[in-house]
Length: 95
Image 1 (tube, helix red, strand yellow):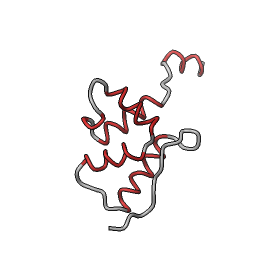
Image 2 (tube, one colour):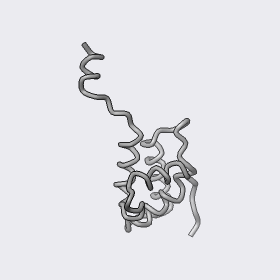
Image 3 (tube, rainbow, N blue to C red):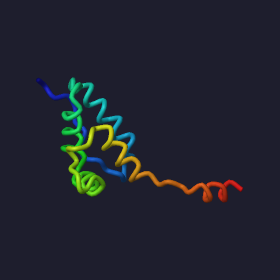
Image 4 (tube, rainbow, N blue to C red):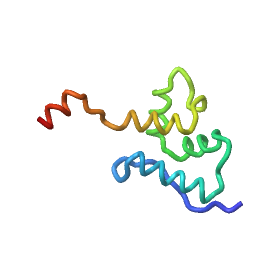
């Protein structure tokens, strides 16, 4: 089977996590990677880069990244990397 395209490591200086995951899903589509979640998880953990992989390891500790689903890892990194404003900050800023 021919491999179409590449994704590369996540680089937060040029792309946000959501855009990276959208490109990754397109890579899955182009290469007929569907079905078992473990295959999509394996591709994500293989191509995301050392920084993201280490973050995932820390966030799921004492478990392992392979104990998580693809969707759970995507959400975990998104929630960890996206700043959350406290309600009082939002109220103050819009007052």
